[in-house]
Structure formats: C-alpha cells, structure tokens
Image 1 (cartoon, rainbow, N blue to C red):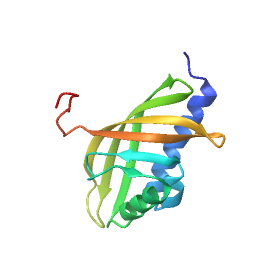
Image 2: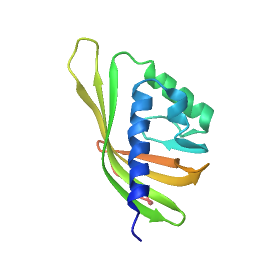
Image 3: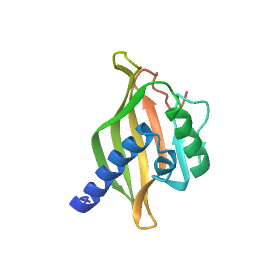
Length: 140
C-alpha cells in the first residue's frame, strides 16, 4: 500500500523535530514524540526506557553531557503496518566537545513502530541496532 505524501511529510517532520528536541535539551517535547507507554530499546543502555516520565529523564540525562550532540537521521523508509507505520532509518550521533573537533559517536539503524495517537503520529517502540555490534539472531 502506498503511503500518502501528507503522511510522509508528517513523519519527516516528526523525526526532524525529535532530533532538534533532544539536541536542544527539550526533554519533555522529545518524550512526547512517543506514546505514553512508548519504549526506547537500545543495546547502548542496560534496559529499555519505557513511559513518558522515564523517557523525559533519559533525554535530560543526555542533555547534561558536556559539549554539543547532534542526531542525524537519514534514509527514512516508511511502510504501512496495519493501522500504523514501520519506519526504518539510519541514525548518526555526532559529538563536539567545547573547543574540539566533531566526532562520530555511533552509527545505528533504528526501526520504529508508529501509531496515530491524539491526532498525530507518535513512536510506540524504537529499536536501535548499532552498526558496531554483532548481529543477534533469534537462536542466540
């Protein structure tokens, strides 16, 4: 099924806003891009982060780091998934310390489950796969 241009525009706006929110320290706005029971699952952290309050604290902790971080999301691939969407994209995290050179912290692939919630698209679950991590299989 084709995704409408309107839906694609809203999805792109969601990802652009989300990157700006976390990079500029707007933790609550970043957390609100997820559903109230939204999940952030990444092998970079010890456990999934679930729910608006924990997601906001996660973003606050991220913003407390020294220097400037930038989340760069590219190559969005949006597919219909029932009444929701699945979005796959590449995510680079770049860090610039005060007075220092920028460096790539990590390169990842994200897979997000999006649902309509309160009239807009929100992330129900984000799964992050690091490019530097060994691929896990169902049998591992």
